[in-house]
Length: 489
Ligand code: FRU
Picture 1 (cartoon, rainbow, N blue to C red):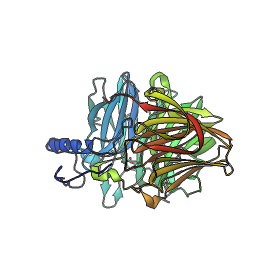
Picture 2 (picture 1 turned 180 degrees about the vertical axis):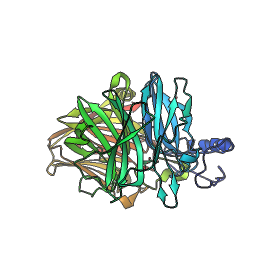
Picture 3 (picture 1 turned 45 degrees about the vertical axis):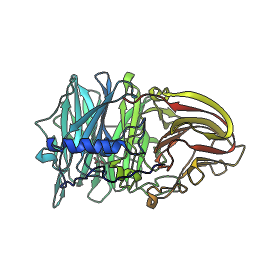
Picture 4 (picture 1 turned 135 degrees about the horizontal axis):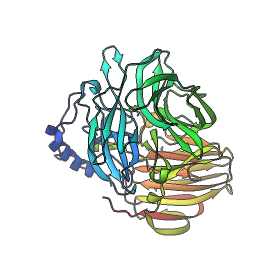
């Protein structure tokens, strides 16, 4: 059982708002790290914070023959406090080397945090772009900044920071999350924004040297932009442009945009001269409860990839009292299927599920809580459902072929999770009579993929019993189960 006695384990310290990490904090953070390690909810193959809160993936790159993953990190507490950048790297997306802190907001121009951004390689250096969060009593002054990492891993903030200071005409102070890319010999930066009429906007800047940036204007997007756009990212998949943005304030639909904030993709063509995205198809990226702020990037051999924050907005989670919160999704490969964006687990991770067993049964008791279950469902029944967990503590996956709906239901869990944002999530629009289903359970992190990522659900569950699950199908299912075997590094 996940019962933990918290008595006398550690004395928690309190911190002034906007405290940044200094040497004097190191020994406390070490204690906190040991405390977190006793949490019963820790994952094995998802990245999570050693202490405190992790949110957006930042600056993700394949640089110096290694995947460099940075992330938003408030090390002291499991809440959205002063944001630093954490860093870890890996050559295979399985074994990670923790590099600790990458950016500490210790400069005046970033006095309220080093916010999100991406990275780009130039002349053997990795340029890490970020928003220098800067608050005043009159509101925020948007500032963008850059730090440069060399191949030895040394990171230095540019002396030209902030490289963009202030808002263009017509915009509010809410402008952030630079995404820099190169096209036809020039550099471009996308920024998420809120304009003075409280409408979300995507801004475009250009540069020749990554330091001097010139504002070009707003990019026209043929979709609902809510009241604020965050974390734009652009990637080419099979010759098409794919723009992914995180939107605040989209109107809820029965099968889309159910979370506090949503991540949306557009497939088509970004015309940088006319500043228009010609959209051919768009949709929500993921249909689960806990998915936001994706970042796309090119992996080894230029494979288009993506990773997201495994969380969304301000959520209260059962792991808060264990002093850690959220994590990142698994890294995904991106493909197009009839112009729809699909995302599916990278092969490097898929290969780690071993001890595979075939089953032909209505019930399985798993051997652990880190497994990959794969099976097919077809419309031989109009409605089909599967329970994961135990008789009074489970979540449900359901297929309704008549209504063309797939849903995840968290209402039968013993420990409720973020109930005020609803307990059911639905996806629709596949219109098929047979699906391949892949369920990845990593203790409290669950990711489900339908047809290798035509639809997906990323969400957290905090089962009282974590070692084994009963998986109960309401039909005689045929499939395979494998267990995660890689040893943590
Ligand atoms: C998205 C976001 C970004 C911001 C960062 C701060 O989750 O709000 O817009 O840069 O988180 O941590």
